[in-house]
Amino acid sequence: MNSLKNSEIKKKIVEKLKSCNSVAITCHLRPDGDCIGSALGLMLSLREIGKRAEIYNMDPTPCFLKKLPGAEEIKNGKIPEGFECIVFMETSALERSGQENPDAITIHIDHHRTSEEFAHINWIEADRSSVGEMIFELLLENGMPITREIATCLYAAIFSDTGGFRFSNTTPRALKYASLLAGAGADPSRISRILLESHKKEEIFLLRKILETVRFNETGKIIAAFIKRKFLEELSLSLQNVESESIMNILRSVEEVEVALLFKELDNGYRVSLRSKDNVDVGRIAESFDGGGHPQAAGFNINLPQEEALNTVFKRIEEMFPWVKKLG
Ligand SMILES: [Mn+2]
View 1 (spheres, rainbow, N blue to C red):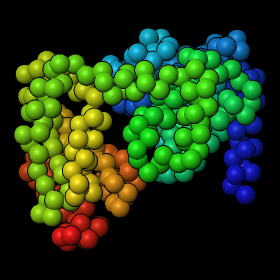
View 2: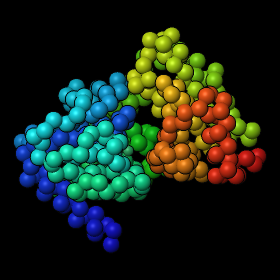
View 3: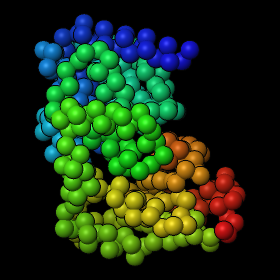
View 4: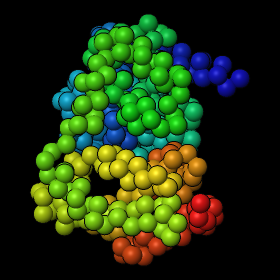
């Protein structure tokens, strides 16, 4: 029944997009590869059919994603008036876009299970690997253009949210779509170089500093590391330009580890990113701290000094998932 409903929603979305002359797309705050790639893919496809399509994000595009086709055209700031339709790309809630409630037809496309149906049309499917997969399906099923550039952006989106086809959301469907996108001109080797091998020299020195902060809980099943502001200052780096996914992957790569935590120091407290290996639902942990996310990837803010923050989060995870406290 749900899939029938979803296919009707998809039809409605395409009808709406086709009936509007101008479409603005906006991503969630701290945009990642999935929402940027998806927004670009949709923008470029709409332009192919003669629409005025633009992306307006409140937060800047991370450096490594600027190499994706069309990324140089992403605008920073509020969506100006005059767009007939606005697409919210995996923003979960209106607030997570940083935008104000617009006077336009709104569409919300997301794969977060805690997503709110705040738009006129909401297409939310929590079992999707990425919104990249959803946008590809939307274009494919409706005969919308999928050029080499569009395929590149959507492949990058799926690649990004599946951790390079390694996480448990790497479903047969995600792989099938990636294969179709490669067939449409996306270059897997080039895209993985863009997404995984675009580090600046300074980031290697930053990694050395971060690894010196590594801590484990007693059983070694939780690993945590810190990005302190002074590290960034010493290397003239800014947090938004640090590609932290590869740091998370290094933390996650320890055999016993079930949950990896990265504490990024803010003006007040820390932004905590969580990654898991299937057995711990980190989305639930983040929700318990008023954050959000997926079972494998989530985040929240905590306003406590370093040690207190670390102990509070360790304790919460051990309370919610008591087996994490047991050895073996
Ligand atoms: Mn996503």
